[in-house]
Length: 88
Figure 1 (cartoon, rainbow, N blue to C red):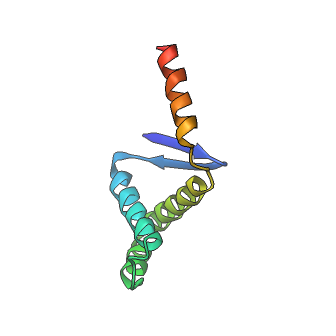
Figure 2 (tube, rainbow, N blue to C red):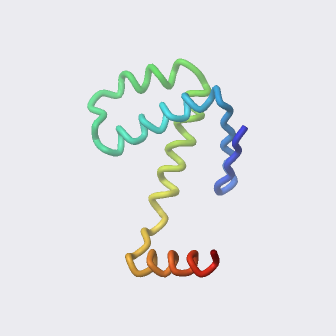
């Protein structure tokens, strides 16, 4: 089992839950790409099981958290690679 803790939210995923997690993440991506014109299928999927709702909420939280992290500039990326190379 893989366990990921972010801002006090524990996300535990077994092999069985992995498919649910991937599906939830796909729904979140579709929503944020504005590719989801009708939420009917999403609503049906969410109502099928509490695990679907939980995974969707976790995926949405992860999406929001990663959106708050500013991207590295090219210079910062190159500096990080230089540091990693010097450590090896």
